[in-house]
Image (tube, rainbow, N blue to C red; front, side, top):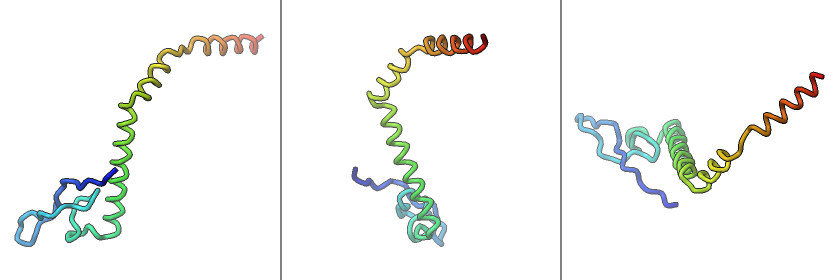
Length: 95
């Protein structure tokens, strides 16, 4: 999957008070000129990007036909036989 540049702009402001017009680093809130190269900022941005990718992947799985089929099979399976067998074991153990 190709990396697509996010459309997020840097949240920092220039010395004259105008907002910075640069793009923020991927997963971050600031551009390279406003602290995006600091190790702790890069680490947090990597974590945010990883979490976003995981959320996209998990969301795609939840929308997939395989997950719907799993839900349908789980809905058809009844707990009644399992509960009956467990109750029978309890009866035998209490005798």
